[in-house]
Amino acid sequence: MKKLTIWLLATLAAGALVGCANQKAPAEQAVASAETSLGAIRDMAQKYVPDQLQTIEDQLKAMKDNLANRDYRAVLISAPILTSGIASLKDAAEARKVHAETALAKAKDDWGPLTTEVPKIVGPIRSRVDALARSRHLPKGVTKESLASARSGLDSIRVTWVEAQNAAAMGDFVTAVGKAQELKVDAADIVRSLGVTATESRDRTAGS
Image 1 (cartoon, one colour):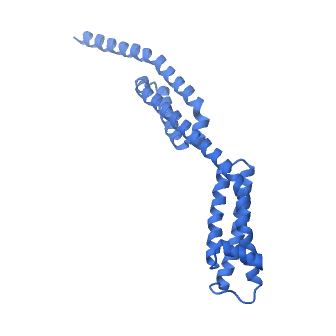
Image 2 (image 1 turned 180 degrees about the vertical axis):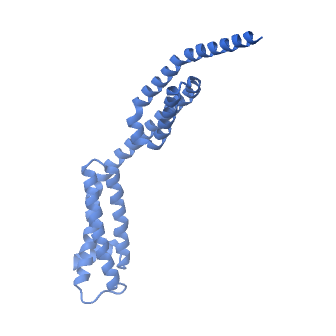
Image 3 (image 1 turned 90 degrees about the horizontal axis):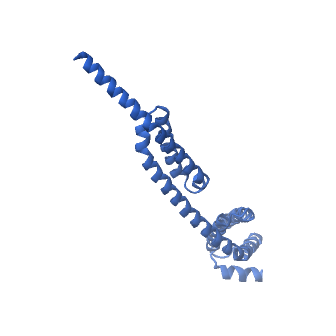
């Protein structure tokens, strides 16, 4: 009986070793395939969906750790999940890339008119603020505080406009347009703080 038990244990151990050996090559192939697939899209994923990429990187690392520990069964179980994750990562990155390229093309078209529009908006306001600063008597509704705030706001607008132009020069038209739209809002706030409309501001500047 004892000999039979020893023989059974030896048989099971041998079977396990054979099964383990049979799983080793497929497990190694699964890891290599996953590394190749992820490597092909890693740069794009890093640019457009870095958070999702990190999740896949962690899964691949766990898979490689299992391979190093000779847990081939765990490798083969996780392989389909990782393969599906890499495919989803590729789809997400490509979709984000298309969206970014579309937004960039639109921003590039929008930037041209803004290079003319923004100076036309800001120039008259700056002239009006300068004229008020030279005036001995401020018009009704305009205080020294609101005038000082307007001057400070114009300084901020100047900085934002330089940043927008620099972004455009580097090809980042999305950022350039965003900053241009931001300063247009700030310019409108300054006009309201002076108690006049943009049209009135231009008209009064012309008459100063």
